[in-house]
Amino acid sequence: MAEEQLNKGQGNLEIDDLSIVSLDGVSQDLIKYYTEIRIFESIFIPTLTADVVVRDPENIIELLPIVGGETLHMKLRTSTFPDNPGTCIQRSFAVAEIRNRGLDNDRQQVYTLKLVSPEMMNDVSGTLTKAIPGTGGDTNTEAIAQQIFNNHIVREGRYLPEQDENNLTILGTPHKSSIQYISNGWSPFENMNYICKKIQASDIEGCDFFFYESNKNYYLTSLQHLIRQGKQSYFEEYVYKQSSLPAKGREEGNYFGVQLPDYFNRIETISIPRTISIIEGILDGAYASNIQAYDMFNKKFKNFHLDIIKDSPKYERTDLNSPIPRGIPRSINSYTSVKILNSYTWNNAEQSQGLNEDALQTHFTSDTVRKQYINSFNDYQFLIEVPGRTDIEVGVSIKLKYPQPKAKSSGDEDTEDKILSGQYVVTEIKHKINPVDYGMTLRITKNGVGKDLGGSDE
Image (cartoon, rainbow, N blue to C red; front, side, top):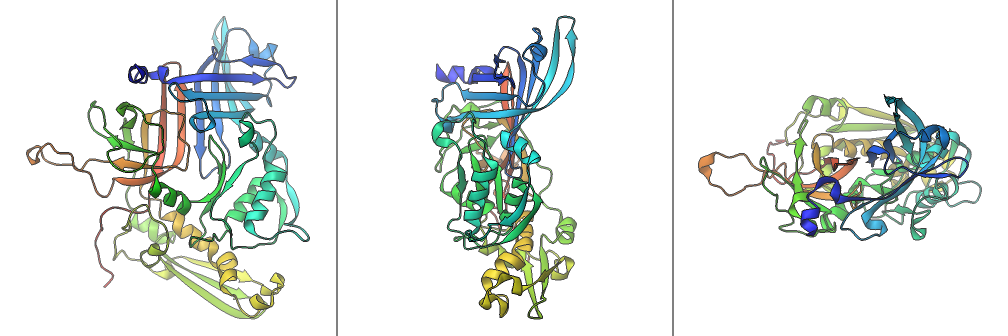
């Protein structure tokens, strides 16, 4: 019975709450008035955004009224899931815009409420102009990030369970990086983005941290930590088949998503824009680059070379083999970064004697190392459309099964494509809900493949 229910489009979803609260504190239920809900989350954007399209035959927009700045509470749940924070989409939003308003007929009007997280609304109206972390403050990047989140980002009154309020999950702790800087009129999000570029975690090489909000929580984490977590346990296995037959998933491996019927494992459509772009990779320093720095205090030069083939074993990859074949033309001089440093301002005798390793990582190489590692995800970046479910969040890893093309005479046994199949990180999710259907478009990406692509640097 449960499986039958979960194959009937909108029957998969319970909208437990969709209400808007006016600036005067008056609440209005919108469940019977909505025609579409769209929610967007990305690890490259600090907060959630959403749209709610409303068909309004009772002139709620003027009677409530809806004028902008209201709070909209939303709670969505896959119908067979338990009512707990890990399986629901349960967030509050602020009305940032009212768009596409017009008469549907002489009896009702239609408009779109453009929504952002309350933290986003606060961010655009508030800036920080002061020394960070301030006199006597803890200069560790973990401590600074937590302080900015607690004091300047998180908003009270969010529609979240009490135990999940004011929560920021930070991975890679304890951080070994320390910074001091001036926030020169930067917003809180801009401060967090700056800190992300300087973090050196205790357990990984490189600097690939991001600050973002999923539909469950706020995170400060790196792509490498997301990959490492995904290797231990996938969220789900998705299967692509060019037929209407059910796709059997979870045949091997560990999974933490709620077990659902095979219907939910099937990829409805998949888009593979590209698997490599050599010229772009050369020009933007994705394959090789160098850093040149000059310390104005001790009058010393320093240089640092990067090569994706030689350096990639130091970093986390979604699979064992590099997505870049050996022998591709690459030169460290194709992309150069220049750094001007002043070790005197660090007020540290050891550092002033000449850029030590911690200073190199935090102040010298972090930007370029970050750029090269993030660029390693540019190619294997796909869009897949799958049935919607409310226990997913951006940042999880999925396992993808992609079939290997074969002639009809080769037999009926399915064979996976070793390059296109494997672990992918979900970097973006677009939830799309209407009264008859709930679907998702996932942007998935990886920086390792399950087969050696060959080539030689000899």
